[in-house]
Length: 397
Image (cartoon, rainbow, N blue to C red; front, side, top):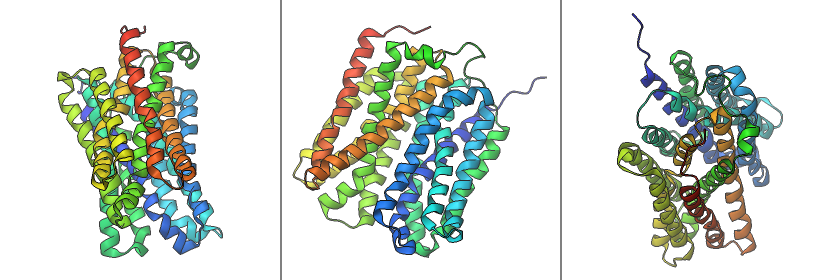
């Protein structure tokens, strides 16, 4: 008698995979001032930490198109958890061991960024390959765990620092490292299916010749940009607009944003069978434009804060929704397509926040001007969805 495969275990492992990514992306930024005060690292060097993180992710996204199918999903996804755990452990150890603490921090960041990049490339196709019904809803619910992970990291770390003091940050770093270490064993034992059989998936060169593929890439760039811009600037915007402390700014800005984004993805995951994905994404694109305009044009701080928070609802399904649309429209895209989509999303998430910072700086530190310019990304998303709906209604074989 054949034993039935437990795909729920696979799903739980993938959920924790995104929680691991949330730890990697959101924990270290909470320690920037601690690094400055403890190790005497200048802000110009600290600014290189998120750059190293996102640049490493971009490189892994690109490289994954070459090696994931050859090595296999299981080895790569287990490696993602081991690299994430190792990076977090070394973050607590290396700065004290090396003569240049900043070098130790960078080594640790690059390691867990490699793990984070692999998570981003692999987790979505692993779930897509499982024999679940309602894949749109599953994908949205899966990506909601990044949001809940981010909220957990911000709230959990804030509580830990309040109770035990920021001086004990190394202990908390080791505690967070337990999550990917535990999850590595989940991925070792859970069932993992191939997304497409050998020889049937499209090669990157074939994808590049498809106009549809480049439209999907545009949607992914705009999704990553729309999400990351508000997520990364929400704290600074809240502090400057409302004149509150950093702790309150973190809770009212990025934490509230992540909560609303998680609610959006969870609700769509539960209601997706009743909703048309493209129309829902169009509505979210319009709401996103409104939220950016509220944040950038309103003279009332509370309206600006509402724009930041509700932006989380609007961007919630953009990233997972684009992945689901890509799977539907291009079912033979395979691992290469998922890796290139992740690359496009990370590219948008890297370029847009940096652009907002540069434009705001040129405008005399006026963050509202930068956010106003960033409204171009949800507008382009809306235009791309309209073109997709009119020109590419059929699947690509």
